[in-house]
Image 1 (cartoon, rainbow, N blue to C red):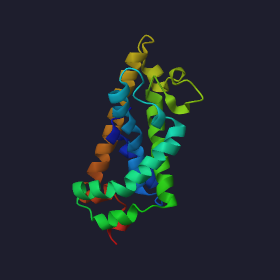
Image 2 (image 1 turned 90 degrees about the vertical axis):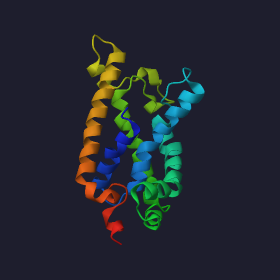
Image 3 (image 1 turned 120 degrees about the horizontal axis):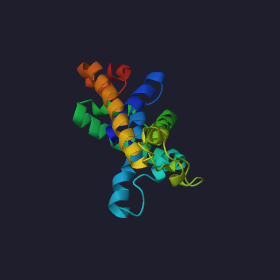
Image 4 (image 1 turned 60 degrees about the vertical axis):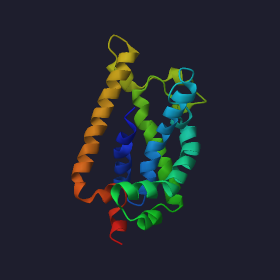
Length: 191
């Protein structure tokens, strides 16, 4: 799994493919599935894997979308206005509840788990219909040494973090003069 902030390029890429999508919703949606990781480790460490319901299609499309939508509406404007010094009123305008916000959150969640899918030896993507232990990511298998899935997972994690890290840095360098563009659409900033 890429480190949570390294899912940002997925949101950025989706926003470039369709400029009508809600960029903050894509960003929050691409991060939200990982909120279950610390919760599962803290409360079920060792009993359950650290990826479960929010890393399934059903969980991402339902619970993940609801959490993402609420976080985009209520938390995103506060956090982003503090960190990036973007006008909170403009962020509130962009983060209003709308069908596009919900679709964007849903897409962010879905693409998060699709990015994680190839690099995990345990994939709850089709849970509860398929046992997550029966689905091993293709990168894990491809990068396994002598059939060792643990080494394959380690190698897949390093490769994916390296690639998404380089893309994230490239995006930041490209937009460094206007950091607000990284968190809100350019055409809404100029209003």
